[in-house]
Image: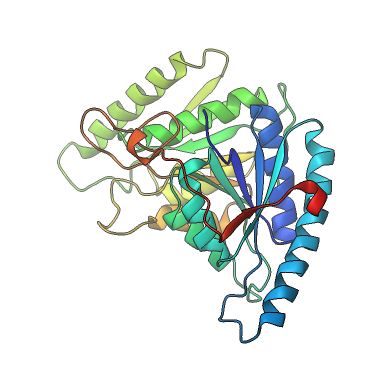
Length: 312
């Protein structure tokens, strides 16, 4: 996929963003994609003096430089683009996400309140960014082979969840590992025959998707309990968990479903959330997880400044 920002990383030098950097660098190397490391240097409140803004920018430049050195060690010859944003981090990442293959953030960044399971930036990005978002949390590994932990995907077979399934198959292919597809029936809409239809839709979607990834071994798991419990249990030994932003039972208007939100707070591994906007006919969901009409070239405003490595 041709995306201006490739793998878009939200970075601020915090322990959580360092974990995200490691994950994103390896992902970019595996996909042959550019890694764009975005640091929002502007404070989250109006600066009262020019000196404050100058200090904040220079501090951001130094932090970003440290991250770039580590990313280059992990990526080797891969391309890395530093980007300084004069805007709050969540705003920057959401605005830039339309021209990225995916957005990668840590579960918590600088300034997070002690005790919070999910930081405000990662929560906002997961809820509002376009396409694919990965929140790096818990344990993860990228060891291929028969002992490698699987990729887990949650789906009820609906059209919006097809983008999440495709993302999960891609990740399993990149890692040379298996896929566990989980369908929970307890959250099925309360209509006559609803669970039976969900079973059929689930089987059909996984069968169709598997044909495009013949090298991936797939294990189907249909659970009678809730999606939260089934997915958290399956993720215990997984290296990544992938879900759609909202399921069939989601409340209209909610940007992030309750199941996705729970997984982002409690999953023991990185969580991929895929948002897709459905439209009839041409312009519907693409393999990348969002419609063609949302692919646009984002004209970098003065708030988003590419920085040459020599400047750092």
